[in-house]
Length: 89
Image 1 (cartoon, rainbow, N blue to C red):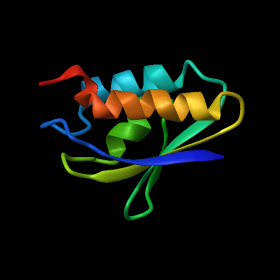
Image 2 (tube, helix red, strand yellow):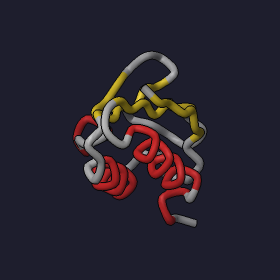
Image 3 (cartoon, helix red, strand yellow):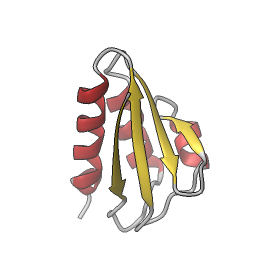
């Protein structure tokens, strides 16, 4: 397993567009990928609906965890997406 902790920085948090981008990016990898909140809630990163149910807001600290084929690459790609603020200002 490979994991990395990141802080959500975009102003609107994890709304529809970031959740969609996150799920699409996670879906490019064979690894199982999960997003875990500080309070222990977890979502499958390949499911936009599950990601949306977490209600993640700006400033939230989350952990991206992956296991299986391409786990490191998946976590790095999703981390980069978060750090880029999902392409938002």
